[in-house]
Image 1 (tube, rainbow, N blue to C red):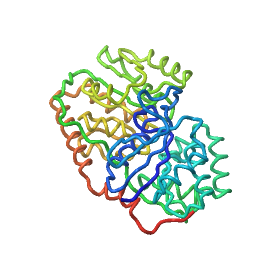
Image 2: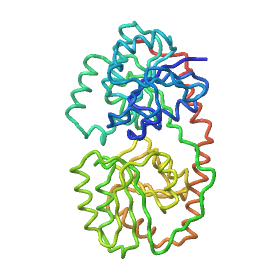
Image 3: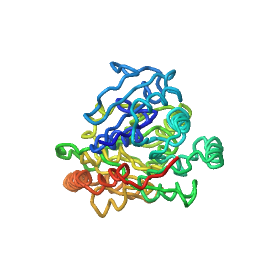
Image 4: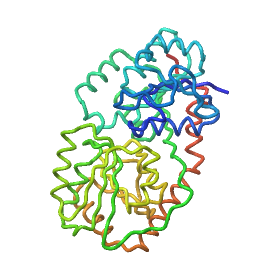
Length: 384
């Protein structure tokens, strides 16, 4: 069986980095034709505490075909990566980030030192989206200029998860790039979806995302300010609160919305979130841009329809009767939010059933899985 070594800043049981972790976990778990050796850190995103009950510097069996090694910060370096590459002798290397100094640039330096001549695959994971590049913009501009000038990514195979990301890669690294498009693989849907408990009038919304500008948190609040909700609207934000000044700004905006009960609950582990979905009517995410949107997929997996922006791969939702993907403007969201507020239980139950059925069909879509398999199986591979 083919062996692929994966380098990633974070992996399960980590969850605080959001989508990139879930994307990688789903990829390695579903592609059973490859033996994956995942090299990652022993702490979660924005944490200095090592994972409990996880031994560092040894291979740990995550799945029968997935081994994981958790490294302390002292060990996550070029020398250690060279040692692991010599030990495993992988048939390919997969980098789950574009900008990471420790788990992208250091492994690439190790590969150059070893005169690597096998496939090297790089997944930007949405880091080239305009909304992502807008954060710490000058640092990223400098990095991209250096990367192009020094040809750090010459002859790599790029993993784009959709046509839009493919175009972003070509724009930043040149039309000559080899780009393989393989959509993210969703997690399995819930075994069943519970009956709707939606009340009319009334609206219970959950927003699962980091409390940061690019996730549309400010828009989510501003779009609710057009009316008095009479105490019948509940909105819970679930996600990391790493930017205190932005959080304070959002809390102030929330306090101005009449008749709404709005809470910022902070992070919840996947296990904790699993038991929360049934408390809500809709997932609400007017994001400025998502490469995939695992929280959207997870919402559908639990039969929770979504109210999101049209800046994600999840499109034509109203035609499928699973939610709405809307232009990122107040008037579009206000009309839908009003309609959802008045929506009777029977109609919501229909949307809920449709969301769950669609999630099941996506998980059973063999074309997605075959695209991910071919990412590693194709014989025509670049050289470094």
